[in-house]
Amino acid sequence: MENRIVKLTEDNNGMLHCACGAEILCDKETGDMPEKCPKCGAKVIERKTKRGYTFYGCSNWPGCDFMTWDMPVATKCEKCGSTLFRKGSKLYCAKEGCGFEMPVPKKD
Image (cartoon, rainbow, N blue to C red):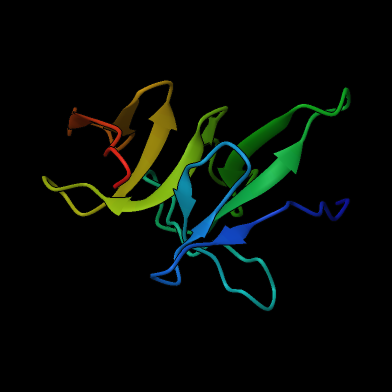
């Protein structure tokens, strides 16, 4: 798999942000995301399609088929504690049966 360099900025609280402004939680040294797959609990990793589009999938593939185009964020689901994903102006939980959604928090 190809390594990808993403420009991250750090705010005053030490939270990392990607270029789109979303807060992400990753290891500053390795860039690994600790978000968990909503299907099996393995790590969610960034991947690329053959045409170069970014998507996020389970590191346990092909054993787990979880995949999304939406970026995982640092905020956890208030209902089940699973990873939330950002789609437009909302955050949602992808765990089956949860259905939690909330607007993206406004920055101060």
